[in-house]
Image: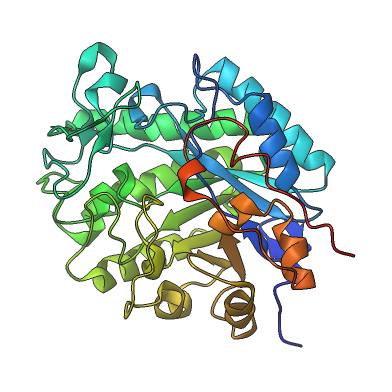
Length: 371
């Protein structure tokens, strides 16, 4: 029997009852004073939890200096751990499974987020160029600064921050962690040769550029065990001024490297939707991550980006992916799995309310009332 979007799936030690995954979605609605999750966030996640459904909670900085947007919930303070704990308890009460995405934005930050107004860090002092603007701690749009290159001796501290974030996620009641290695943030910055111009053990060859991602992954495995750790990648991605001239050698190595570790899953962003959610995009005539890398990946593969119910079903039935993560449609349809199963109409999303604000465009989308 071929698999379908509503057939069971084992992810690590967990049994999913369906394969409609909630993608990690930055919404910028944490408490303003301490970037801790609060009751509004609890309601949002509780609305979207389902029996045997997987939620990947939004990217959460593992350290204060890894922030790049205001009001994004972190996982480095007692208040943040406590706020997340209420959310995980609520998701578990509905029979759901919830992972936390661990985040460090690297050069996609601004000095207003850094202690003493220091420059944000990156593998090399290569600024973000093109039509991109940074967001300050008070929400203003400004040009990006040239980041400061991390010293070799500082990299162990970056790994340690991810390790501590993994421990904090465990204390907060999550079922596992997903490491954010996509969308032009710090770990992807190290992967890509145009941004990483280092000459030490973390630069130069593909193996060296992948070293930090390997070390961070192994640090999380040391906390959780491999079957509760996942990684997200965006091959052929173009978010935040990224892009490798020839992604196949790099990402073939990375996928094979991660494939030896027995992870819970690997999570791709399809190139057609690359852009970190900043605009409505549907790139044409681009490769498919799931088609290119499925043959190299031995475990569970989740992919995201521009799927409909029909195309998601086709991807599962063909074996190109094991589960599909939905973002924008999960924002505007809190009961998305049920709607897809019923083939009920989907509520359109309002991009203007994606980031920041309060209930509007966050917890006020309707549930399907059809029989």
